[in-house]
Length: 368
Ligand SMILES: Nc1ncnc2c1ncn2[C@@H]1O[C@H](COP(=O)(O)OP(=O)(O)OP(=O)(O)O)[C@@H](O)[C@H]1O
Ligand SMILES: [Mg+2]
Image (cartoon, rainbow, N blue to C red; front, side, top):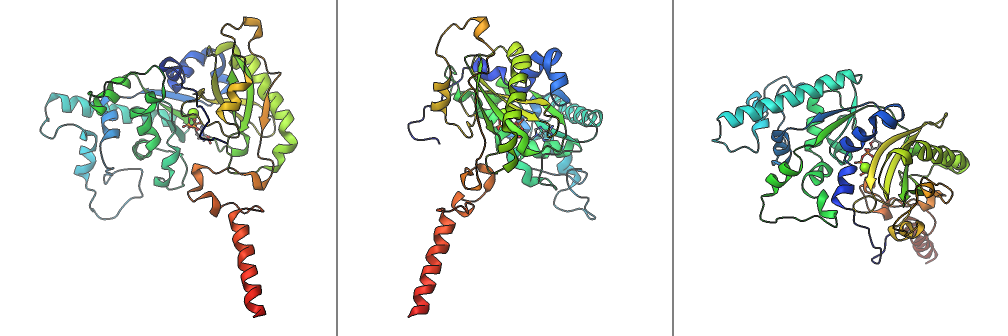
């Protein structure tokens, strides 16, 4: 567990850039990504969309396909819909620049729509580094599944993780130099001039089969269950087989093609066949969550050698694989939405203690 003494390693700007979804996909597309990842389309993000994401408020128009149809016109009128992509531009700046921004935004949403169709009609979006998983409350099914461009736009706009990508992500880097005098929005536009939005074909994933893998000095050193708010009993039985599948995947695919030294990658393992699919790359340290490990122990697991010979890379002989061992070991997480004490029903937890105290109090009252 993280303590105040935990030292979180800081990545470099180059390492962070390598984990942009567009970067790693383009680097691996002819090697591993196509056959071992989800079908994905990348769409260049125009400046007008970056400015729209950073502007205050969410406006949904009458024709907005992300919401159920309304019968009568109401506060959201069609004019607002037509104007929403102009947000972030000066109000009286209605000239050529505005028209170009509007056109770029329209082309962008058209491209999203076309890509969704090519991907079978349902997608999971992802911005530079982050999926809008914190914003599923705006969608009808409480998932990231999007069926049209309006749903994608709404989800991205409502996501703090996406805003973090735009304004904060580089601040975690050791070598990032920020000019505090530069306007935040202009800085985001500059830093995201080449950002691509990724649309991934939707799969109904089984969350128990998602794992986070930690690579230190080119070797796989740790694997953690990805969703640490749940206990999956069967993982205790299947652990070894899953570890073997992940290790083989790392040796044959990832380690040969990903050039980083220390990094983290996420995989999905298909439930029955144990085929491994790459889901994402993340930096070592920074804002990457270490899940069932902490950064101190992860740091201590790899070699500190500066120069590791080629034949000492891609090893998997010293991997620690952690899954939640019992219901009582569930760790607090963002997804709970309530303090952990209100969720933890294990023995010795706050709820059991409260119930024991309450029973004691009742017994004492009855005996009086
Ligand atoms: N193609 C897909 N279909 C359905 N769900 C998906 C798909 N791709 C990803 N997901 C779900 O979205 C979650 C988040 O995806 P991803 O790991 O790309 O986001 P992230 O923002 O990089 O997360 P983190 O901040 O933990 O690194 C995954 O754990 C998975 O449950
Ligand atoms: Mg990630």
